[in-house]
Length: 423
Image (cartoon, rainbow, N blue to C red; front, side, top):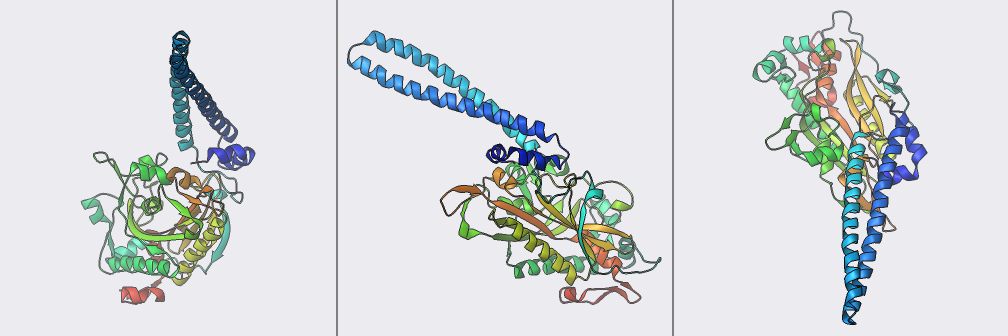
């Protein structure tokens, strides 16, 4: 949620930044500040009226003591009027606050200065590419055919027991999943992240805290009886561990990681884009989260980007990094780098990670603050990244490592799988 005080102090900058998202930025900011003006004015009038009531109360007591009852009763009548005025002003303030909060919940984060303006993924900037694309020839199999050939993943069984988008992993396919999860967690631990095991369901406050609600309400599985949501990513419970917390500067950076299954109702379009592991309703992911000082959060983001790139290098996968344009960014993000690996059989790039800085957007919702060296309470910055999401990593590993001897396992994973080839 945008910080209204910061918006007021940096109005033109925020309008310029929001404009990158192709929004009516001037109109939204004007509406926001007008509601805040109503709230502030009502608060000031209410405070002044309350002060007048306190002053009158003191006078009434004095008048009664000195036997000036008529004058005391006259002032008492005035206090009754002022009480009604206070009640009206409080209602006006409350309504303005509610309207302002509802408006703020609908406005996405303002993009960082480096974010390119654009409307869709076609306008994203390629930051760099790494690794050579394997040339497997025209007879290369897509991962869903490899999965069937070696009995690694059964998509039909998933449909039988649940529905489309819920695959069943078998034998070496299941072991590969487990190996990747442990490898990703070990890499995160080496990088200084503390591992957490967190709930896979969260309450509405947690969803609002990280920005999934109300923006992605229709994309989350919801248990109406207990009003709980299945998590779309471990970012939600991990970041909410610090909801309503006040930190000190010495606490930074806080680095957390966790493995969870992730659940998403929205599964995208039809056709080749969603075949096999390309898009699922349930998938596994290791997440990394940081809570950082505002002065260093973009340096922290670069370390997270380097961490994800380092894992992909060890997996020997060709990849590229994209800086997302304003029209393709997530609701809560100020700057996002996407990682895509090259699918040799499908001949296209597949997104495997998003790494983002949310600046104060989530922290403002979470009331996640810190006291600086001067004792001033300020909002923290929050960051998160996929390190990594498994489905498309598995897809590209299977496709890119096809050999006559079977599917070659990258050297970094062999200690985890216990086998060098899938046969």
